[in-house]
Length: 236
Image (tube, rainbow, N blue to C red; front, side):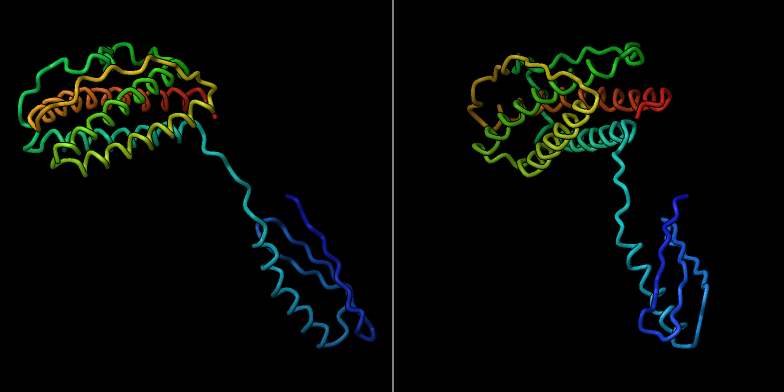
C-alpha cells in the first residue's frame, strides 16, 4: 500500500508543533502527533484533519476500459432488443399478409447452421456480422422512405428500430477496432423499384422483417457464444 507522508508545521505558535499524517489511497487517515503544546494546537490539528478528506476525494478513480466479455454481452442485449421490436412489428395487423418472397435480391443470406456456431472465430465473425448489419441498415432506409411516402402506420416504430440498428452498428465497430477485425466492403445493395401502393409496402416490410429477425436470432447467439469463449480464455 502506497503511503503519503505529510509534515505540517505551525509557524505562528510560540512553541510550534510537528506531526506526521499517514494517508492511504482509500482515504483512511492516521495522525501521530509528536508534540502538542496546548489546546490551540489541538484545535488547529482538528481543523486540518477535517479538510483532508476533501483532498483525497478529489483524486479521480483510475479509468478501467470495459473488457471484451462485457462489450460482447452488451452487443447480445442490444440485438435481443432489436429482435423484440422486429417481432412486435410482425405481430401488427398491418403485417399479417403473406409476403411475396424475393423482392430483395441483395439481402444477406441467413443460411447459418447451429452446428457451426462453436467453431466461429472472433475477427472474421464480427466482420461478417458488421457487413450484414450495414446491408440491413440500407434496406430499412429504403423501407422507411417508402413507408413515409405511403403514410405507413408503423413508421414511428420503424424509426425506433433504425435508431437501434445504428447504435448496434456503432457498438460493433468499436468492438471490431478493439480486436483488430477488418471491415468488409460488400457491393452496394440492389433495391427493388419503389412500391406503387401501401399493399406493396406491406409485402416488402414483411419480407424484410422476417429476414432481419433471422439475423437477430443468429447474431444474438453468436455474441453470447463469443462472450463465453472469451471469458474462458481470459481475453481482456
